[in-house]
Length: 258
View 1: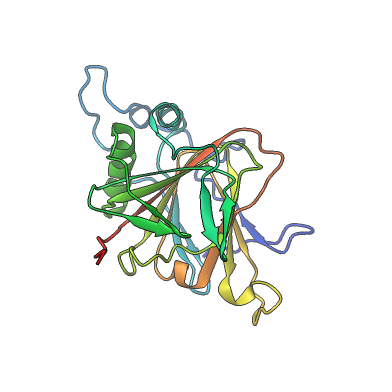
View 2: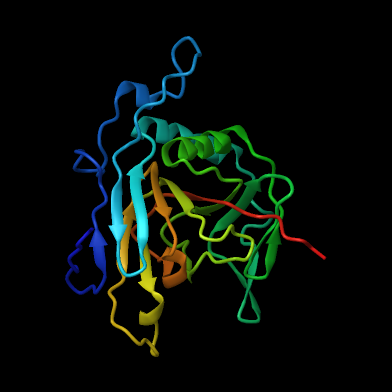
């Protein structure tokens, strides 16, 4: 179990999730075979052993964190994402929240199997077909975790002003009790969990929020029952000047539209 200490002037527990020994980036140095997607002759490189995993536990909080890609490969994947992902039309698409339409401070895209739809905050998404870079990430997640995902929601944050508020991933299309795999590329951002009983003026319990710092090329597996009890958010961080792309891979079931 992690035991994070609150930082001065901040009541959250901030956890250092670095795996290995690069003090500046919080990442370990990858072996040569981890930096290349394929060998010099174009053949497939043997899959490396699963990277070290950190367990994150709390009252109803169950997550696993690991570095999924070494720095060089993560840089290459980020370039491909920036080149190939097609975001929803419009610089700021809208969501329906508490009876009103709001523009969202980030860009979004959805990809997945053709028979699926996904409804989030009043908007129903029909996924674009899988593209090679997303298949590469999805298959890497599957090889490490043993979970196969059929849908991915992509959020692109252009800098630290782009953000997402507190929410739970509890839509009815999700396979019950299935995990959600959150893969991050680009700028390291704070990711905050807050227990449902400790939110707002009507909080009934005092449970400290948990703040994680998700590194470039990392994987956070949010397992059941995390999304039952804990909200999560990516708050504004004005000092962050570079983009971040986050991909949340999900197991979605086809909903009868009748």
